[in-house]
Length: 163
Length: 136
Image (cartoon, rainbow over all chains, first blue to last red; front, side):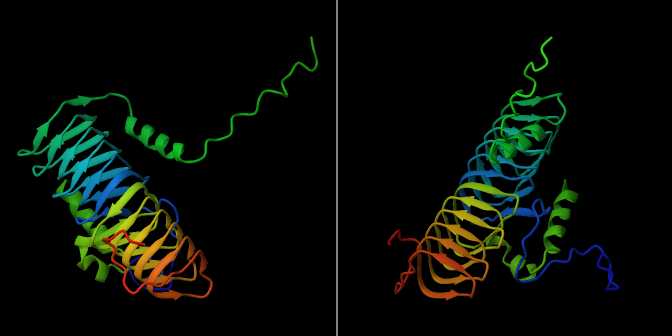
């Protein structure tokens, strides 16, 4: 696309200092740094990396809870990777629990991996339905937008012609 | 899993302007364009907002990018506003860039307003602004 340079084409070209209006779902990751504390909910259609403290629910596509991070609340995503501490329910088709993790709460999953050494307290339930978290994620995002106007009443269908 | 982590880090490294930023990875927070935070953010590092925050942001340095929207107070030592803020801004150094729109008071010690910035509200000067004190 940007064919002027002779370089490899994979580097995304973005302005350096002044960030332009990034398109929605830019595929970038949101980062909650180690010294940050969020009291409230996070809702995203992209990826979230949590290294700090979150007291609230997290809904996203991918959630990574880093080592040293603390989450107090439910997590709902397509894929969750846990290396830190979580106190709350995790619901995702793919859940990975690393050995440094400390999970206090239920895990609802389709694919679950727990590394030896992980601290787990809670139930692990497997659900069969395809992509349940996906549905909830998009539903929750849709619910943020103004509700679509109800379908037009079937006025036009009124018996015009009669029988 | 470890591969995944590596990939994520690689991703970060490829981000623009990340040289300075990634060095101080510890205190670097990004609220991406996709993310909506309903609640307060409190920290001591640098916060970049490209998405939406409905709540108070309190950190050492805050940058609201063009796509960023904050409905709530922005409290910092240094704040760069390129996006939309609905609520008070309170910082020692405030830069309102061309694309900024601030609906609310801007408490400042040093204020820069670039041409084109839309500031609706008072802009009171203060000798010093302590972001840890909730003073007016």
